[in-house]
Amino acid sequence: MKFDSQKHHRRSIRLNDHDYAQPGGYFVTIVTYHRNMLFGEIVNEEMQLSEFGKIADECWRAIPKHFSNVELSAHVIMPNHAHGIIVITDGRGTIYRAPTQEQFQKPVMGSIPTIIRTYKAAVTRRIGREHNVTGIWQRNYYEHIIRNHEDWDRIHRYIESNPSMWVEDEENPMKHA
Image (cartoon, rainbow, N blue to C red):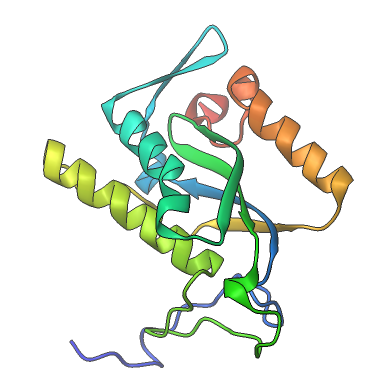
């Protein structure tokens, strides 16, 4: 089927005027398809990774191997989602460049959308190859641009405490049962 921009348009939840390849910290949350509990379970307020969860964790830790301008800070793989802080360090090597914006079928190397797309694809490919399972991720992801040290500290604490707060987590299907 040929791409029809009127029929296949997806409304972006990204900020229109922000260059997602510029240096800075970004907090991301990626959710599993239908919020399926694929990555493990919380036992005594600690995350116990399943085989799928171990793959998701290994692929997350490998992001800097594929993107030389990226460092990782706190992250956690939860039963049905992943949280992490991605730091873009050098803006792809130069401070003299035009702002870049993601467009359909025009990825921007080293941008948050490209990093997340690559991560999700790596997890999906590996789980598919090793376990013959598809349908790992929900479409899109949530991101927040970290604006200052207070924001950074708050997000870092949130990520680290996420397993102990699972009972109250909005992504916990038992909270809504």
